[in-house]
Image (cartoon, rainbow over the protein chains, first blue to last red):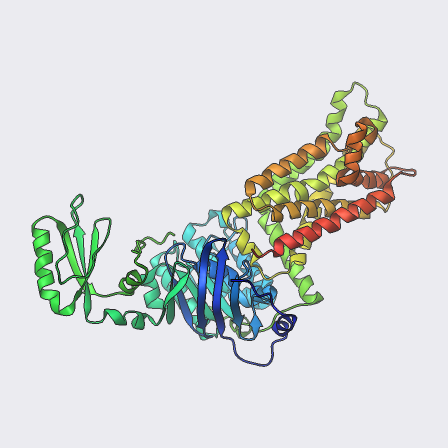
Length: 334
Length: 264
């Protein structure tokens, strides 16, 4: 596929948006190749203002490539990325001003005081000194970061530094706020505070693009989500609609005794997935009784240490879509 | 808790351009760079003073009686070394570090233009170089009682020398994607400037061919224009020095801008 350089008229249009209130973020037929590798393959999606949109996928799926094209660090091989009437590919200056970005790696703030880092990030985004000062103070309170207000970046723990980076990204939010694994290293209590701030961004009209491979967290937090696998968008919808295919099914999990071989799955169970000593399979609700009997037998025979029967989660749908076991439950590192 | 003003919370829908936006972004980016160097300022100052005062005083150790001409040459070449240390040597190494630790992409995603980034960094390099220049010259004057004569031309000489060196470093840092390669090239530059460019010693000391090579490099010209502004009398090759330096500065700035804006 060849690239299509923007025509002059498109660039001019991008610089002079009309009175339109259309602030929908649209990715249309986006393809990015690196030599023979197709990192993004004809991806189309859109995020409305006020929406928290999850971008899920295993490592190397192409999520970051999509983000980097949005903020003008990579150029698409073909396709379009627009924000309302702004063409973000043709006008990377507009892309950087209209999109806020929290990268997956920590912000480079070793020698910055916490308040200073957040305020400078806000000032660079064009906020007035007074407004940014008030907003910074309110964010520090909202995320319970008061005790580190004057600390230097290099003395902060990974989680606190992550939260400071989050504040830097949202102190003066753009129309699109891109958050790449915002909760990495953050403790459970402050994670809740962080999600509250993300919801507030939506309430003020930002389109939030949340990049994550933490499926369980995304299930609770996003309005809609897309699953990207091997560069392609393989599913898109609300968390509930993603799980629709799993209705009237249950998830049976066996914690196998270390060193034992994977037991032969019964005919009524779906294809099993084993990660470490965890064996997970899907069963129909109607088979719950025989499944419990079978799992109890396995436990009694010493093949498994314990078992659990539970409702299907988004993670099960995710695994089905990507044929990939997410092993980051409880482990937030990438 | 004070609620933040709506002007901040509601995302803006305009793209700021023009001179007012440029100046605002420039001022904030200078503050950003200064803050990012905070932990290194003490070390940087010591390195700068060692490079400047160290060279000025160190040259006397080579001779039992140092000729005034030699002392004058070294003392008026040292400002070039000071002006190059931050922008041309440290600058690309900082970019290499940013590439290594992953922060390079965040810095490139900041909503400032390439010219703002470049000029803010140049300002910081100038601020980091000038005090050491002044101290080295004062020490030289006290130690050797030199016939120094500081003319107003020191202003363009220092500004252009620092600008050309900073842009050269900036172009190297941003155009070379391998951090290891960047570090090796800057080491090579140190080697060239200290050993094989007529900065601290006269051109006449060099083999003719090496002198010819140096005519095409910026370092000799940096020394010529700086020395001319610090010593009395007429000087040869000052005008051509400004021209060659100007060309280097413009080409390096263009290369740096291109490398910064590159979207693979």
